[in-house]
Length: 409
Image 1 (cartoon, helix red, strand yellow):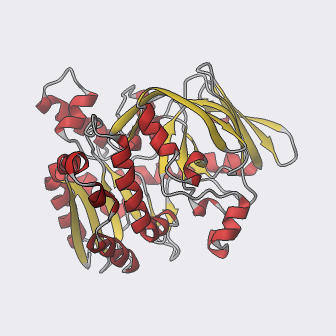
Image 2 (cartoon, rainbow, N blue to C red):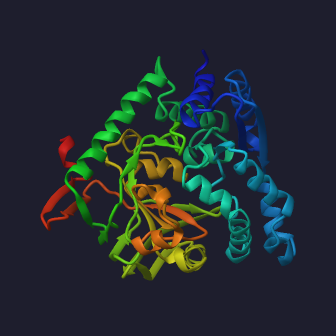
Image 3 (cartoon, rainbow, N blue to C red):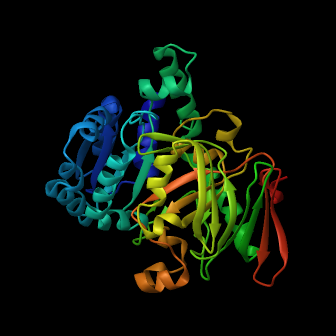
């Protein structure tokens, strides 16, 4: 079987774990149409009830951001809202092919992009909440596009850059192995061992330090839980939301984050790059920030709503993870976040609270679970990162030394 076809099958079978007669929605850039069609074919062969492809075109989106009247940006189309809300209520599974040009929207007023993104987030909030609560299974994956591949490998010709990108992607998702499905089973077990380490030590607080200047303390809510590798929908079906994935993650307590964190990689957000930036938190909220490049985009992100100035996720990834060891800056959050410890501004995943379905939104808020229209991951892990944990009995436990889990030395 062709490696790319193996990848498509892996996404359908292990990623969203498509069930018989289920609706599948694929979001795909028009540049990746051939792969989207391959995924659709695999899905039908695996018993999909129907496959719908939602095509995306960043060049057309840029034209809209540059020239459309303001009213067009803030009025989210009702027909598009209906598409998301009706498919999510029909228990659709979602595959998102994420392969954006990292600098597509360079030169576009960040405020216009922020307006449009906020309007979209409000209009399809129920769809986003169902996905982030795992009520609908989903998977985010990537395939090469010329603009992205050339950004990552500028020294290569377009054809060679795309070929190199395919090689790297297939390796990160283990599709280059003889039996990718079996390889993922072993990978999931390794991630569960890291989760067990955190839970067995009953760690309720984390302190991060490194030579870049990060000195940040994060408390975790009561009833928090670490997740990673695979997750489950409420009906018990297992799926993998990010392919690749190397992280274990949980929810910070909204009002209990203090100190400074310095980004170790650029953040690609709304078609712009935010580079060399830091954030300072007090009682959970960003109170100071700066960036060498992309400051206005960072400002718009933080000011999206009340919750966007607080954290919604803390994720641990060893510095010596397979993706990090490639020493490639991907300019793509799906890959860069799986090469580095990271945090997310904005909405938290309710599933990081034990038995979260038993809590109302108000009760989750009381526990310290942040809510927002955005969820933006940024990377801060380094080779010299040290993480000290504090247990529920007040004892200190070293979690990371020299960028890696201590128990995996």
